[in-house]
Amino acid sequence: MSNKTQEELDREEAAALSQMIEETEDLPPEDGEVMRAILCAVRDSGEAAKAHLRAGRSIVYSERDTPRGCLIRKYPDGRRELFRVVDGEEVTIRELD
Image 1 (spheres, one colour):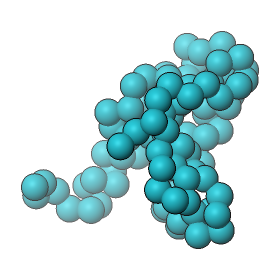
Image 2 (spheres, rainbow, N blue to C red; image 1 turned 180 degrees about the vertical axis):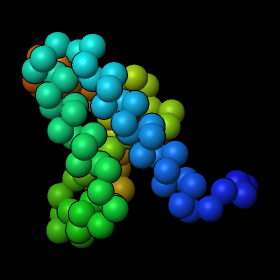
Image 3 (tube, rainbow, N blue to C red; image 1 turned 60 degrees about the horizontal axis):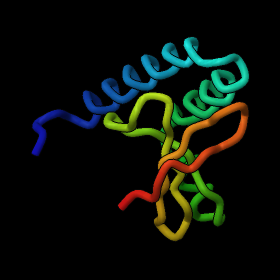
């Protein structure tokens, strides 16, 4: 178990998201724009994501170990899938546990 405070973890997560946003500059323009929009939305406090799930809508996010260029979609029923955006379209890579 980590001895880090929530504030430290939040700072690390924000830094990781900023790095991922920077990495989208290497993607084709249409893919990079979609990824940047999604990643910027992820930087909120999490309340919007929780509200989306409660309302029956899926959310998109990433974790520290999410492969580069990929994102995770979580559905209200708890299912999660790994995907990437190719030519402006979502391509599912696999279901996650």
